[in-house]
Image 1 (cartoon, rainbow, N blue to C red):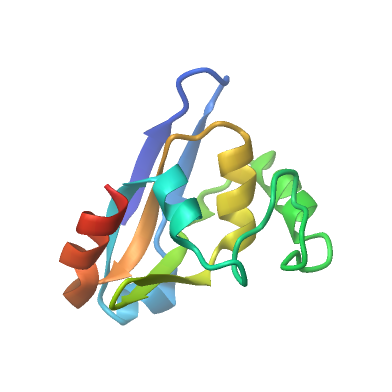
Image 2: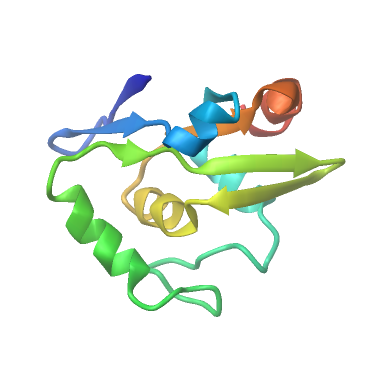
Length: 123
């Protein structure tokens, strides 16, 4: 599955795809508010502005910025939920880099049985 999301004020666009593992596990795509997703993350998962903070892995933030320059599709961050918490399975650095560039909405992959919960919390 491929989805396109246009940035209103930057040149070009970002094209998203679902990770093969997520697709095999029957995750579904969902367009969510990037700031709601970012703020719903616990302190142990959030990457600060500019790729700062204790949760930054090596130079993943900068490497993602270099990857975006290739124009290749971006894998949707994978998100899971329990009662009132949001967990990023993968995609912290992608989320932070895109947030820092002013993206308002982002495609994420969520478990099909958590779609309604995600909709309540993130849209």
